[in-house]
Length: 214
View 1 (tube, rainbow, N blue to C red):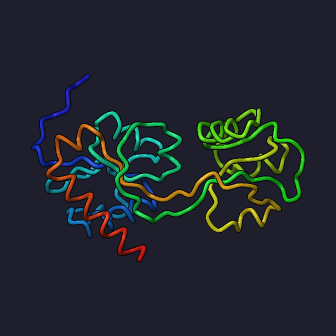
View 2: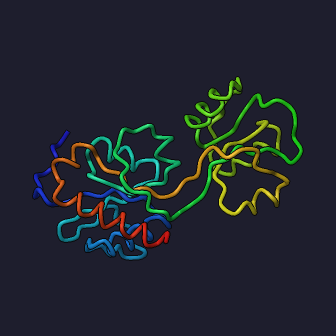
């Protein structure tokens, strides 16, 4: 494996997810003082700025890159972070991309839950185990709700924002596992090695998140 090139002590590498969160994350980090402006329509996966490198990743890969030290810090949803099981520092709840992870069934369903379809098998197993529900967990992707409508699963665990998709398909939330939003995460070693850049950035992000939620 080719060793990573040397970089200045103050140079940060950030892992950001593709898509809508990327745009919001870039705007927020710019307000926090970082010189970021990822061009729209760019197909580049690595973006270089003065003192900052941005890696554009899939959501699920952000915690991996941060945990393994390829990136010093990143932004990712709490749902993805919990599912990853990665041991990273999570100093700031940024507040945007808010949603909730819920247990969902057909309206009026009352039978036992023997199989659960989900994109979040780790989180779902922990939830079911804590409640003594011996259900099989099936990892799916795409339209998770369809598993409950076709009989593939007795329930699904999935993200809910407005609930409009559930209502349109005769589904309802039975329980909320947790509320999710975008989080700023940091590699634990980088927090010490690059503290002169990361500590002030964390404080600025906290201030911005607090003023947005006020």
